[in-house]
Image (cartoon, rainbow, N blue to C red; front, side):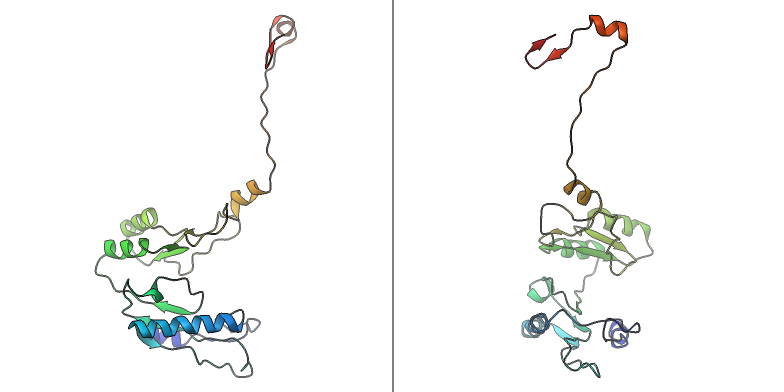
Length: 200
């Protein structure tokens, strides 16, 4: 079913409103993705959909790749443990929720993680325990809008602060600390105030 749906995705230029998947940024990145696909084949993953030779009519020189799907990817295969940043899906099969969560959390990257379920217990356990910086429940791409504190964790994060939300405001804000005391008119005439070098 996944392969069937992937084949129906329309690949095309970004300014075409009917396009669902645009090109990658440049030819070097396209070649990098193709190298990862070949790496997956060499490692023994089952390639069930190959998008390397995808051609968009009228845009033959564009940096296009069609949806690509690997099945039976194991934890030992590097293709399933890297951030490829391309239309490549690596399917790892597990028998239990706990096994799947452990498999995800053992990955050195933690940009986003997603669960599809109608079971509230598993949704809650997943959200609490996944290492992903952006978590989706029945949301395929959990990239939040700009007012949220966005970014991945572990090796998926680069920098000192998460760039959006309150962290972004804090980064561009010069803060100060104010310490003050107040007295009424009569009290102020007789109250001694402590200073750094004595009392007045």
